[in-house]
Length: 341
Image 1 (cartoon, rainbow, N blue to C red):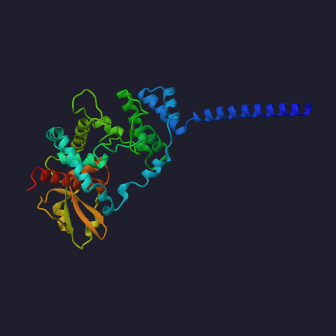
Image 2 (image 1 turned 180 degrees about the vertical axis):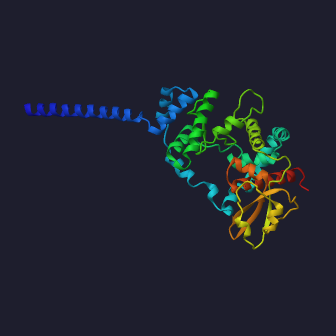
Image 3 (image 1 turned 90 degrees about the vertical axis):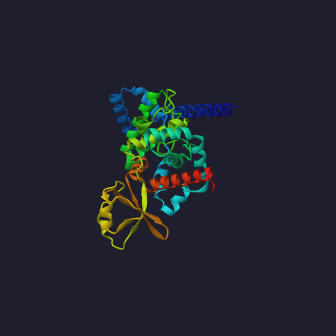
């Protein structure tokens, strides 16, 4: 009997030690969880010194921010890396064209006002929103704070860019009095119907319906005006061409030219290198050569200033070309809807 009691006491003591050990472990994990990485601590110091944030508040915020490994996977394999013949059908298809016509019809007055005020065609504004978020239906499900923090401190290739955007996001939410944990967006931290990064939101978003606040998450008018304002601010040429198909001769001397997205060479010079536009256009206009992999052949285009402006929204020739071609399809479908004969 004594042995049984002794065993019971021994078991109780052991259980007590295990319980104490468990709570000690929980405490130590809790302490570890609040110990931020050195680079985050440095970022916090910068925000305190430069913008007057409270250190304790930022430490509390970042201790609740979640690392999202899926975001790193997504950003290393963007859709724009696909060849053109695979990328194009994602955005240029009957359903997206039809929904673009519907979006235009439902927002015709706002689009007309934005186009008249800022000079960007209605179909281009519509197509940008159509490519970005399927006309506002797919704005992203990641907490923006998690996305930006994950990329700012776990994606060395573009860490500086995303730290700048994280800084802008903290400033944006403070200015708007918004809950920084509640705003959701893309895996890259882009926000709302037009998918503005925080720096673009602060610089180019506008209160287009004059209701006293800027809302790109649910306000279509503000989103339309902001897209037009962004493109105008980046140099949209009113009435100017965007791109045209080109024919390239067998001579490969054009390969020696710098051919980025910015149009640097005149049509006149292009012609001397065997690059000929398929429309009549001034020899003095500057252009860049765009090459698209169309499965069995290379597709050549000349991109002008307005093509370059669209790439300021997303630095991809595939993106800019999809916006252009979607915009043309939407306008044609809408015109046909109005006048089927």
